[in-house]
Each structure stands twice: as structure tokens, then as C-alpha cells.
Amino acid sequence: MSLSEDFYKTSLQLQANVLAKNESTLKAAGQQIAESIAADGILHTFGSGHSQILAAEIERRAGGLVPVSSIHDPADGWPEQIVGYGKRLFQRYAYQYAVRPGDWVLVISNSGRNASPIEVAMEAQAHGLRVIVLTSLEMSKASTSRHPSGKKLYELGDHVLDNCGTPGDAAIEAPGFAHKVGPTSTMSGALILNLLTMEIIENLIGMGVTPPTYVSQNADGGAEHNEALAQKYRHRIRRPI
Image (tube, rainbow, N blue to C red; front, top):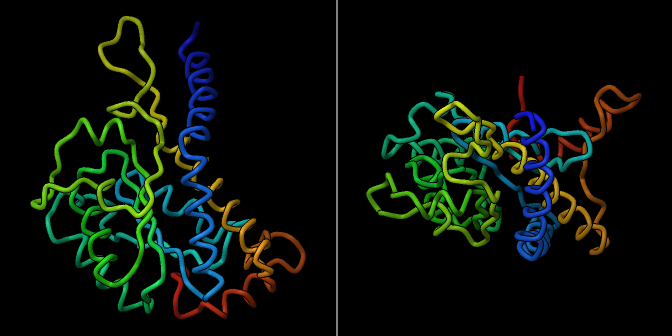
């Protein structure tokens, strides 16, 4: 079997594992976040390193929710191990975008051990937000914390979503090569976050609330639709110039 075939088969099995492992958490979190959005709340997202990709995956996305805003790290994740950086990052963001008690923050870290995501979760809780975590539980539990509190990210979540990845993220043994290849956290993370989005939307519809969702900017009328919805949240969601 080639490496690409092995990765493909591993990926299919991982998707099944992800759904089975997270189904009940997705339903519970989807209900509670929908209730927050129905009350004009925002789902804030944060990830450092490659997890920034996932923080942006459900922000400003056609078919996705408008009240989703990522906490942008201008240093692109490099200071993720520096104690105090994540706290100040969240404080600056909270001031700029009027973060409110009752909002939710989604914090993403594959290892769950570095200071920045841990501090974002802690500072969000101090501001009255509830926290949902996306991590690799197997990797996190096998690692030591790099934060002075000794906490790991999963220990701070009101809800914890498991990307079902292996320690080190790479999943494929390459014959004749010393290290595993084929990271899975971005792929499984994107699936989980889109499943969460579907749960939120389904719950909003069930509550009789029209889900505030984007349509494609490239569809006729799409830009106008999106701008009209975004105006409601214009002081509370991060938008590019």
C-alpha cells in the first residue's frame, strides 16, 4: 500500500471515530451556543500555530454563521509558549470587539499544553465567557503543561471536542523512514467544526430563529446579503478592511 493510500484509509476511519467520539458533545454544545447566538451572542475562536487555520475555518464562510469572530494573533503563533502573551492577546481583543458575558469562545490546540491557548481560555472565563475546546485528548494527556498553572487546555473546557489524533499528529508509518508522516489534526478539526456549525444552525431553526448565515460573495446578491447581516454585528466581529 502506498503512503497516500494508507493516509486515505486512515482518514476515512478517523472521520468515523470523530463522529462517534464527539456526537453527544456536539449536540450539547450546539444547543447551548445556539441559545447564546439567539440572544445576540458571539462565538469567538482562537488557535495558535496551525490551529489558526481552524479558527478561521468557520469565520466569514459561505454557509456558515455570521456571529463568529476569530481572535487574530499578529505574531502568527510564534509566541505561543510565552507566559502572559495569550492573556494580553485576549484582553486587547475583548476591548476591541465588546466581548460580553454569555458569549462562547472556541479554543483550538492539538497538544493543549502551550501557554497562549491556555491563557486565552482562562481570560475568557474571567470575562464571563464559556469555553469549548478542540484538542487531541490522547496527545494532551500524554504531555506536560507548559503553563505555570500546570493546567492543560482540555481541563478548562465547558465542552471538549477530541480530534482523535495520535501523539505528534502524524499518523502514517513510512517504511525506511524514522518518523511518522501525514498529520490529521487540521482535517479532523475542520470536520468537527463544521459538524458543530450544523448543530448550531439546526438548533436555531428548531427555536424559530432564522440562522444568520453567509452566502457566497460570488453569487448574485451575495455581497449585499452578507453586508446587511454583518451590520448587526459590526462592532462585535472581526472584519478585514
